[in-house]
Amino acid sequence: MRKLLSMCMIVMLTMVALVACSSDKENQSTATDVKFKVGMMIDSGTIDDKSFNQGTWEAILRYTDDHKGVKGQYVQPSGETTSDYLSAADNLMMAGNEIIIAPGFKFEEAITELQTANPETSFVILDGQPSTMADNTLSIYFAEEQGGFLAGMAAALQSKTGKVGFIGGMKIPAVERFGWGFVAGVAYANEVYETNVEVVDYQYQGTFNDVQGGQMMAGGMYDKGIDIIFSAAAAVGNGVINEAKARTESGEHVYVIGVDVDQYEEGLMNDGKSVILTSAIKRIDNAVYDALKAYGEGKFPGGQIISMDASMDGVGLPENNPNLTVETQEKVDEALAKIKDGHIVVPTSADELETFLSNTGYDATMINYK
Image 1 (cartoon, rainbow, N blue to C red):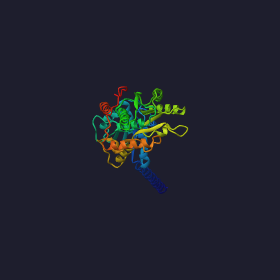
Image 2 (tube, rainbow, N blue to C red):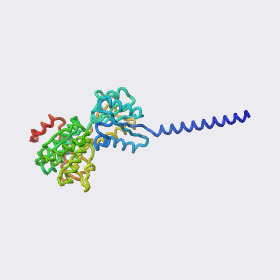
Image 3 (cartoon, one colour):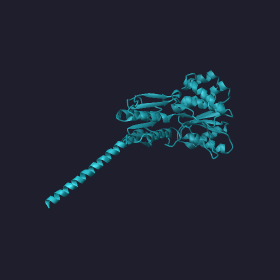
Image 4 (cartoon, helix red, strand yellow):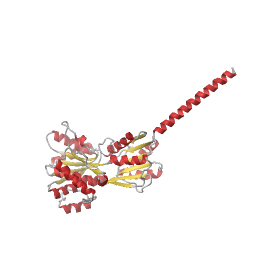
């Protein structure tokens, strides 16, 4: 009987050992399958804002689709204070995210604290930088003024009323640069191609998420005879697009210039046409994708500040612009080449814009772009 019990115990222990070994292998396999996790904090608005947030998230998804074992996750901070951002980042790190993407200058203070407190985590901030750069943080800027310039040219070359407008979201550096470039582009077209177009309205809505506010502001501009509005306002721009759609479907001929990403499809109407004339895009997708690629290859450029300009194909207009004429596209492409080689220097501040306008003979006394 004792021999029988001993044999049974040996068999049972062997089975337990086999199960434990199998379980360990499964855990090891699961851990091996996940190469790393990337987290994103959402800026003002939503993940589907058809603009900056969405462009950033889609870049992460493109990378995770291309690289098996890389997982992506985003969180919506509970508010827009540094404390809210710190809490959101803590949640991402607790979930195992090893690299965190923060799209927007409002994350600067939070990243300044996070990079020091969490040296094992890598951070990427778009359109901003911490007060001191640490080796685990990458800062990426875009030359928005160059994209805005091309958008202004396109608007001036295709406006039928000779009146165009600009709607910004919050008055932050990136949006300001879009606006300054837009005005400069209109002035350049007037001087070089003898258009006679004026930026008759230039406003900031004050948020990035008030869709209804954007639609009301756009309605007021269209009522003034403006037929093209450049909207650099994230989700506020969705309201601008809605207003343009409603008016066009009622027989008017108005357009919107999109921002950050190609928004042509967002402007599609029932007849298959779009109210998006073109879009001043920032290659957020490439910037974020390349940052993740570098991280995955162990070559993360921490401590660096990168500026994505036209020469790096970091800004511009979409490759395809169905609503631009062949002549407009050719002239815009010519200007883009001149920006790349330095023959056209687009203003990056209100003072530089003032000088630029003076040199081109453009009278800007009717608008407040400062």
